[in-house]
Length: 286
Image 1 (cartoon, rainbow, N blue to C red):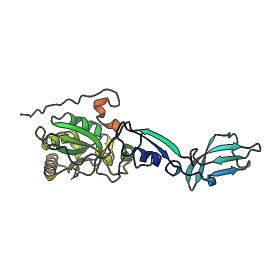
Image 2 (image 1 turned 45 degrees about the vertical axis):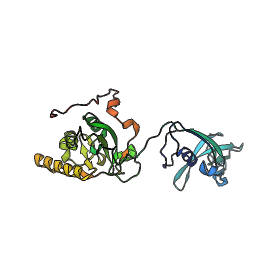
Image 3 (image 1 turned 135 degrees about the vertical axis):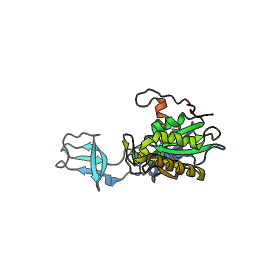
């Protein structure tokens, strides 16, 4: 299965088994009930009289129960001749020690490094749906790598669905690693503003996309980036004659988006028609 460590998506014993493994490593362990599906509880085995038993159920059938407003899946383990039945809400493996064998076939860090590789620069931008924004930066000479993800929010390890709900506070963003000897931060700002366009004056809206996750922003990693970002935003505001609502903030932890979002348009996008990410020299290059 694919899961996120710490999200309680799988049994605790499996999480403990894979922690510390490298891709390709295998591990075997006996997992006790308290780290698997819990101890078996007799209070979860219910005898239902014929007068209250649903008709037509057979042994092995699943039923939904409610406890404190929370749904619980149970199974019919016995149907008596008089129509009464026994229902068990324990997991089938409850009370059992499991022998697990696991192999780590892939692993992806969720939190991007906060510092660039030595001698390189780091930049973070948000300009609406991150698919097209990433492709625009992929094409800039001097950009070494890009990643799409979620920035400037409160929740830890957000998912695409969570961000789209507007409840995590994140914006869809692109993290750029660039060679400052080839591409300056000012050049990256030019690409950013070209992408944002007049949407720099619309809050939480970029093109047809609306919501807090689509707000535009420049998230700086040092004081020089802050100075240049604020200067460029002010210049655009004077040019447009309208307030520019694009955020200029200190970059917060950047959570890398799910793998299928990475280089999405280059890989084919929704129409399975890949777009070129080849570098496009600037018209003003000397």
